[in-house]
Amino acid sequence: MPKKQGLEFGLYSLGDQLPHPLTAKQLTAGERIEEIIQLAKMAEAAGFDAFQVGESHQDYFVSQSNLIILSAIARETKKLKIGSAVTTLSVLDPVRVYEDAATIDLISKGRMELVAGRASRVGSFDLFGYDYKDYDALFEEKNQLLLKLRKQDRITWSGNFRPALKDQAVLPQSYAQHSLPIYRAIGNSDSSAYEAGKVGMPIYQAHLAGAAQTYARRIQIFRDAAQEHGHDPAELPVQTGGFLFLRESTDQAYRDFWPHLEAGFKKTNGQAFSKRAFAQGQSVKSITTVGEPELIIDKLLMQYELFGQQRFNGEIDFGGQSLDSIKQTLDLFADKVMPVVRKYTQKETENDH
Image 1 (cartoon, helix red, strand yellow):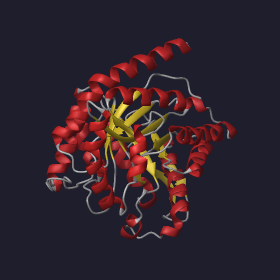
Image 2 (cartoon, rainbow, N blue to C red):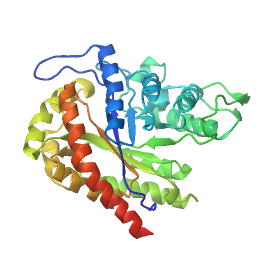
Image 3 (cartoon, one colour):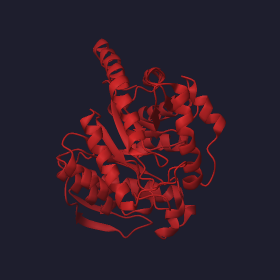
Image 4 (cartoon, helix red, strand yellow):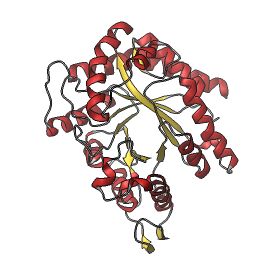
């Protein structure tokens, strides 16, 4: 397991543009993008370490060009690490992805991170002209190319899904040459965790519900694969991320968040979120980070002990929430959760030394 460095905290938005489930109020695309940029500024002011924006090519989202939104955030912030969560690499050109990310890294003076994923929603395959049957092969090939682009000044490469490259210059280079952080999103896939460990690629473990122990097992698969293939797990950071919704009491948090989750999930995923799985989130052993500050503290400390991760990221704005609602979560988390968890995890780091 990597040496513990103390836990970082990030926020992320998937860029959903959903109506409020009770009032039906819905922001325009421009208003929603502006809100996401403002959320990043609020996160920096509140002391968060990172802010990420997802990418989705379907109805009820405004984040089709998430890297453009991140470039705006880069100009509006000074210290915040910024990243994609995720970049749907399977349907994109890795050369263009790298060029855009390296450019944002230059704009932000070294604050950019990429999280590469295989696409949890498959409509983008039709949109970009790919066959879903190539789901795994597409990602593995494009991911291999992306990692090579980061490490080389010039590249010669060939594969099955894009034209070959012959001694092409890789431009621009990132702010600190050959050092752009690239994570692999692994979702609920043990095989994806293994492949990340095999090539020595840091991971982003996304989660919605279920036992924290299940995700600990998957992270261990990643670390075991890294060790097996000659990589030092201590050098491979792990991020985790999922819903974040806080209120003064856990009962209130679950009452207030459920309408957003129920209505939003049906629209964006085409199916209902399990009410039983959501209710089970009130257990400290559940991965779901919804509740009162004391419960969230207990959950994060348990997850830190299980995962030994470097950062927790909270999806703070899902389901057409008002800005006031989002700000309640942000303020409660920043004021009552982050100081306690930071103190504990930094103390653990000192004890390790």
